[in-house]
Image (cartoon, rainbow, N blue to C red; front, side):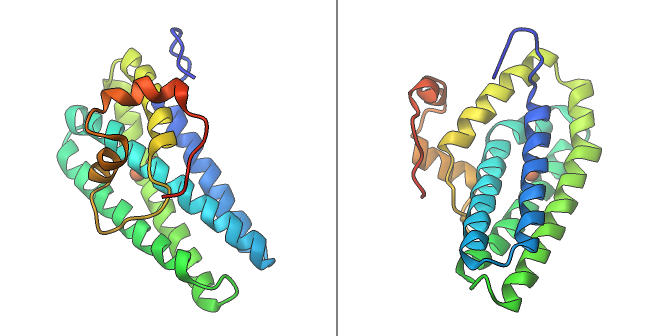
Length: 188
Ligand SMILES: [Fe+2]
Ligand SMILES: [Fe+2]
């Protein structure tokens, strides 16, 4: 995924995740078959969790560093991640055929749309302008790897960076060493 031409940068990876998840949620809303619905919902939850954890590990620190008022932007975004995770925790437990499930999906869709808007309209363009392109390229690889190692279930009560370190071990550097060894991923 990474290359020396800088054609894959982390912003493009994240935007593509946003598109995928948004499409998945659109699909969940139109599908009635309970098994497919459950399956797509669990996939969407896992995608969102892995994306959020990777952002918090590698992208939000860069936002803190380069954005005007980055500290506040990151705090706001992490709060939103937690709210998104709380809604996904509800979705995990709800029967997919109930009105409560439909409400929770609509809520997740709205929360995500708002969060994606913040990132794509305000924060990512500023990152593109301010962060050296080679750093954005390097981060693409780190984010891809972190997504493979990250938890796949929402943990709204705990900081995602702690969870990540608990799962991966104390050295984030090992993320890079693990990159080529990965064959599969368990639910955790
Ligand atoms: Fe995002
Ligand atoms: Fe985010």
